[in-house]
Length: 85
Image (cartoon, rainbow, N blue to C red; front, top):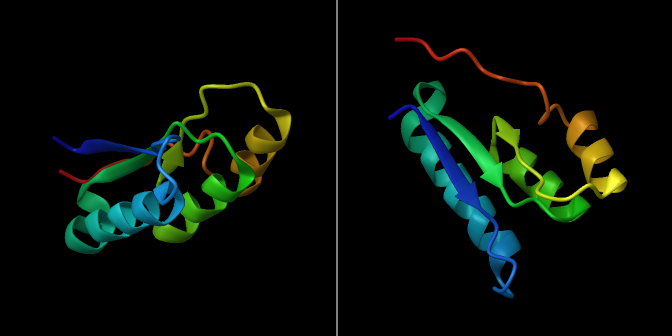
């Protein structure tokens, strides 16, 4: 396994911090050998938290233009990393 999606649980009041912490933990432990995607990004704050935590790319299940623009600005869209063997 070389790709891991860590999703924001929209029902959790601590999702922003929890998801960012999980992303950072995986990236710290596995570095570039694991491509980490932030999933279910629904807000600009979630996009920023994912990027700050080290997510390689993100997926937004909605068409909120502000979220998509922020993800693009942060390099979380179309940034498909090449994983070393």
